[in-house]
Image 1 (tube, rainbow, N blue to C red):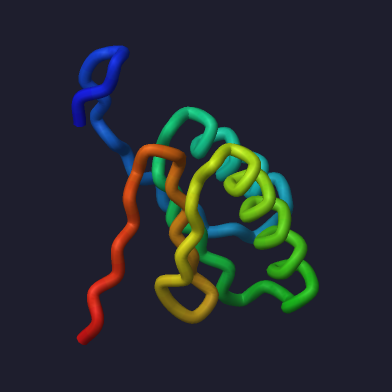
Image 2 (spheres, rainbow, N blue to C red; image 1 turned 60 degrees about the vertical axis):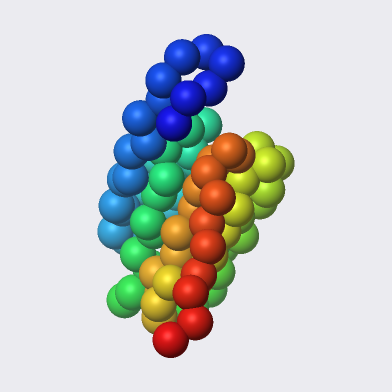
Length: 88
């Protein structure tokens, strides 16, 4: 993708979140303009919700997008990345 700063090659980071520290890694990746697939399967629902709230809040503050892609799996995209979902 061409940007005013040159060519930007999008990257995708997949994180299986087992503790809150991984949520910080997810936010750092989004700040570095990477897409993040966050897997929360197997966590207690309260901990999963806490992580989801943190990452989605940071993504929103950075003008990014969040999309649920499966049970306990979410896609976070930085600003400038368009996420579209096709209907089956």
